Length: 93
Image 1 (cartoon, rainbow, N blue to C red):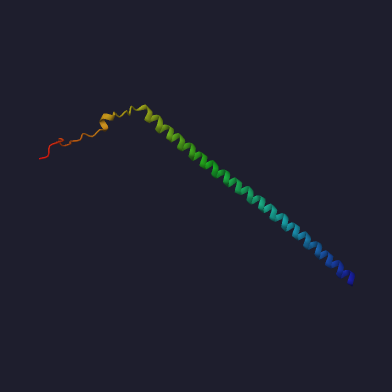
Image 2 (image 1 turned 30 degrees about the vertical axis):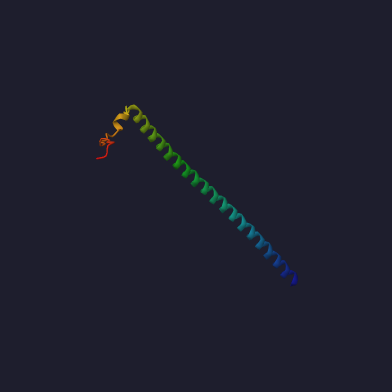
């Protein structure tokens, strides 16, 4: 009777160890899957950001190109404001 109880206890321990190992393997597999999903999400986000940046660079290039085609010279004389200053009088009144 004691041998049977001892054998049953050993079987239970082996089963617990097996279940723990299986649980650990599942946890590792889940972590790997989560990591793969995380990396895929980050890659997708980077691709989206890169596409937006390319579009912005292209838009800025178009603005620069069109601005350079136009003669936008501003003569400095047109920036001067005429001032009406009173006549300087050295003699006090």
